Each structure stands twice: as structure tokens, then as C-alpha cells.
Image (tube, rainbow, N blue to C red; front, side, top):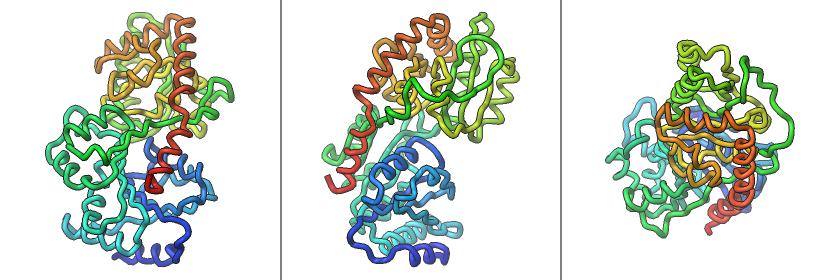
Length: 380
């Protein structure tokens, strides 16, 4: 075990049998849906558990969202710069034996080696699948299917969407008794139609289309920009705000200039209070090529917004019935059509947005999600 990790463990894990220890392994602890969900859960229950987080890529930005009352330690991953898979698994196994957490929580494909390393240790294991990157957006890779089928048998697997539940049963062939469907929830007190509004300044005229996303390839924001270019050429009035940051920002800014959108688009970067950003929008747009149950759509619904979105994951079923005509195929023109009906009719926007808020209140209150995860962590 490398010295940095040994030092962190020695200084942190004093004997404490009263408060259970939960070890969370994230491919990245950057700000994202799964990470924000964990932060909200940890804040909700405070000192009920001790949490240790391993961010495999070294990015622990989401730790800033966790309150001081939460017992939290960030641990460096075992050093794997000089070894292959077998030695890496041995180092993970050694770390797990050293820590002896009450529960091991892994997430998505990027942390699967920790599930493999734990197979012979028997630490209670919860694996959470929230979706896939662009490499598995359209089809499952067979070697990953087989790896999930073997390494997750005997674990509890948590899935937030119906499409993932079907995949776990039919493709991964995991035992149904080990599968848990826990839909994502939203903070209805924070994300609501009334409240402070972010000062998002965009040139041009017309309703403000907004999107909130990590600027990564799977979010397909180039599709949104091309859809908006189609609307611009036909004379539909709009403005566009892209809230968030990420590796695709430079290429998206260049594409916006090529499409002559520069006068009516703003890239805001991250906004400290995203709830205030939603309240600045007239329409929310999601253009992803792969999603399951995105928090951004729930937040838009809770904020009383109509949504134009690609038809991926559970999005069609999440939205109110009134919003269904604005769920589009994975096509620039289809997304433009989904946006057009919302942009040209203010009354329709208001009716759809109100219906989305009503459904969020009725179905997606985050407290139900919190209690389901709490029961799971405590062995339920």
C-alpha cells in the first residue's frame, strides 16, 4: 500500500464501532448527478454514518457540497501507475481488508474492479448504475455485460430507471432479488418556480432556452446548437443559455460561432445556485444521446418549466402528459420541432410547465429517495 494512502488510513480510521463506515468508490467525484445525489443524502442524515470517498480520477470537487456535520474523509486510490489488472485488484483487496467498511458502495462501470476485488472478502456491497458514457450509448459491450454478470451477482444493485432495470434483468441476467429500483428525487423546496433569479444576460430577443449540463460528449450539446440554428434560419425568436462547464466547452463555442449563434447564446460556466438559473429560463432543453433519469430534467420540472428533450432513458415517462409532444427523436430537426411549439406559444409553455411542477410534487419528492437509500445502507 502506498505511503500516502497508508498515512490517510492511519490518521483517520480510529476504532469506532458505534457509527457504521460506508466506503464510496466513484470513477470521479466531480460535480455530477450521482455525486450530487450522494452529497444530498449525506447532508440529509448528517452523522448517521461515517463516509469515506475514493475518487479514482483524483477529482473531488463535489466534496465542497457536503456539510461540516457529515463525517467525511477523502482517500487517495491505491497507486496503480506501475501495475496491471491483477496487481491492481490485489491492492484494492488489501485496502478493503485494511479498512473493513460496513458497506462498500460502487458506481457505474468505472469502479467495477472494486466489486471484483470484494468477491472473496464478503463486505456488504451496493452497486449503483446511473447510465453509460458514449462508448455504451447505443449498445452494451459484451465483455462489460459478462463482467457485470459475474461481479455483481450476490451484490445489491440499485437502478434509478425502468430501462436500466430491464437491462439488469435481461442482458446482465442478475438475480431479481438483488435489484432495487430507486427513482431519483428532487429538492422541491429549493427547485421551485418562485425565488431568486440568476442574472443571465443574453443578446437577442425571444424566450430563453436553457440547459444545465456537464459539457461532455454524451450530452450532445452540438445537437442543441444545430437545432437552434435551424430555428434561427426559419425566423423563430429565442435566446440560449448553456449552464455548466467541461471538456467540450471550447469546441461548442467554436460551433456556435460557425452556426452564427454568437449574438444569441451565452456559455455561463457553472453557476453557484443552479435553482436560480432554472428560474431565468422559459424553456429547458436536453439534447443527450444517452441518459437514464437525469436530475436536470427533474430540477426543470420542479422549477415549473416546459421541457424539450431527446427520447432517451425514462425521460418520456418522467414528464407530464402535457409535455409528451416535445420529446424528440435523436435528430436535430426533431429537437428543433420540440422546441418550436414551446417557443411560439407562451400560454402553452405555462400550462406544460405547471403540469411538470405538479408531477414533480406528486411523484419525485427527494425525501422518498432518501429514505429508500437509508434503508438500503442499513441492510434493508
